[in-house]
Length: 206
Image (tube, rainbow, N blue to C red):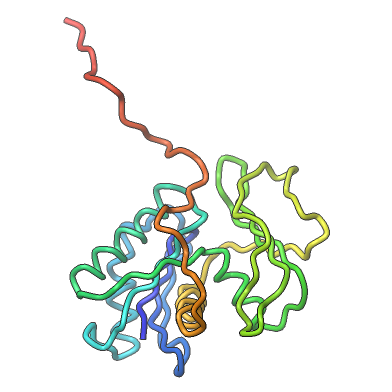
């Protein structure tokens, strides 16, 4: 049983069980209030599922692609929750969760998942179908581009405004079950953050 968190688009939290499916899920589509809502979403999802922290086996978190400010909120929350609860954190590419959900709903063949990267840019990932266990096969990406430069024009395009933590958590369960790799440890920002630290002390004029 996993607590799943994704803030690559809006904010979404779920409690999932490999056999029982999605036990609860709460989401807020607002892309600017991740830090304000994530705590309530975690508590609410656990309460809705009637699951104690002790019963969880771990935490799944979406690693993007996503904008720096929002994405880091979910990753930090997952790490803090895992540390406090003594539970491992597993990482999942957020676009893979979108593809997994669409394939589970019956999509056949290739797919291009596209999400908003802001600054008039898009994130994309290309999939060629699923493996023998129904897990999405990502052929290319995640990548970042201008709207007119989206690659893989021959694939069915899926524009997603949100990432379901329920789908992300279920994907994590089956990645583990079938021995598939999780995402790497680095968040998929795909560009530099909006705010950077200066290299030296700021000069003050008298």
